[in-house]
Image (cartoon, rainbow, N blue to C red; front, side, top):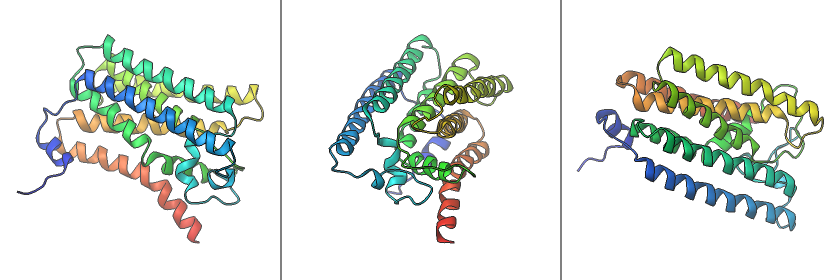
Length: 255
């Protein structure tokens, strides 16, 4: 029997779906597990079991493991509490959307489902390397989940836009999504004005937002398009967006 990857199965069977009830259960389990991970990482740092240098991003030098662990680490409990509360509020928002918009195509729920998986697998590497590559940005022991939280915010924006316009490839959806995202993107620096010494530079929040919007839109477009060629195009763009900063950062380190 020849094995076929799930992507191949999806591209040949347009009836693949994820029921809303299973999506809500996934969101609940996903948020609880990540909450436990965040508290555990903070405990290790607070007790001195894990040194901050081993899990933080610094322009002067960043350990390889920190590229993944930095987004899940926090120095102080206030930072952890703020990120955790915001993260859970976004989870509640996504659950409410699935209740309010019952008539959405069930394939739609695969979009945030896959995005959530990417947010805890490859995105931490992409996010960390992209932040380290920003010209003129000096990072010193940067940690925090707010970049991933911003990505979830971006995913929520795309989810709401799809619930309203119901077509990932329509001009109205694309313009609406861009306008909402642009407003949120431009509002991030206001937090830095009120807090001139933030724990995490707002550039990190903006990068997270852009990644969340881009990932969710490309996945949604690939899942719902009627063209197999466009599906591969969207997925290729997604792969490039995730891998490009990692590759560029690796080259700069080697040079």
